[in-house]
Length: 188
Image (cartoon, rainbow, N blue to C red; front, side):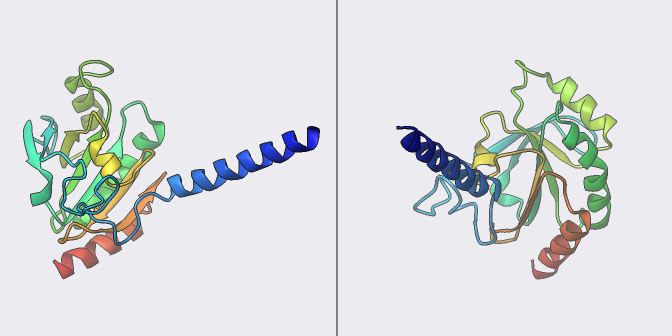
């Protein structure tokens, strides 16, 4: 009886470990907006909203942005309560200074504005952390899910064809992001 319990526990742990590895890998090169998670037929209807609400903040205007028209694009995912996201902003600012004129940046928060945080609080956080590019909302995590992002902070680089060509999670490798974004810009 104890042997079955131990074997069952080991099998469960192995399943969790493999599932955790697969979930942590995030988007891979070759994923695209049209065929990323949730869009088996590849028609682009896999959950990316046609428009993303943007917030009035430094480098960003209140309104909306049509995601499909913005490729190539660097998309970052963050939350105002995330200390790693706060630390990463200086690296993203440095990367934006180097390649932001060639490849636009968009940062998205999945926080529920109006319930957990206000637009003004997000804009204040953005200002405090020297954000200087488009800032939007992803309250239902549709974009996050589309790019198979499961944690924050995360960064995804999408080429002109809408394919994910590079991603990073945890803390951005600024040099790698700049190099990859420059290559995408050259090929656009």
